[in-house]
Image 1: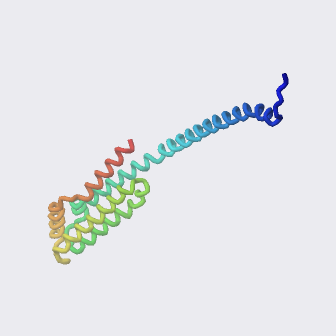
Image 2: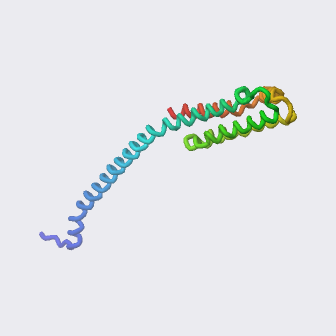
Image 3: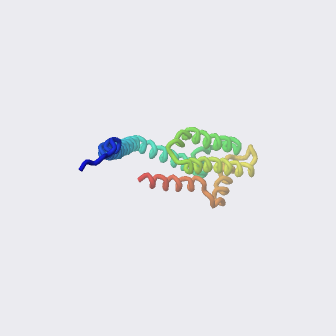
Length: 177
């Protein structure tokens, strides 16, 4: 008994297993190559992290040091010199805060936007505190008068922006590990 099969159907029957084997091979190779690519990306990230983590930690350290240095108490004690007038001390305090900030401005590339915003806010609020304290003095008053007003204003202010920024930075560093 002879089957009369169309030659196109015979060709399809012959090519179907080859197509299945080809599709299986394609998807298997694709998955293998995707996995290898993912592993390569992870290796690169791990290597990058190995180099950038120390830079990040150094940036956080520098920003915490900056925040400690602009805290009103230590700042006044460091900047105030004998025979300074209130005007001289005010100008020197504001200049010191701005200079310290400018010295650390590049650290922002290693920290989150939130941390950097807190650092910037701490700088601005510290300058505002110094300016508020200066408003209660005259330019020719002794620098000790301005120092006392800064300590008094800082003590009355329950909100400590530098300390709040340090807390945010600490939390961010904890998340790195």
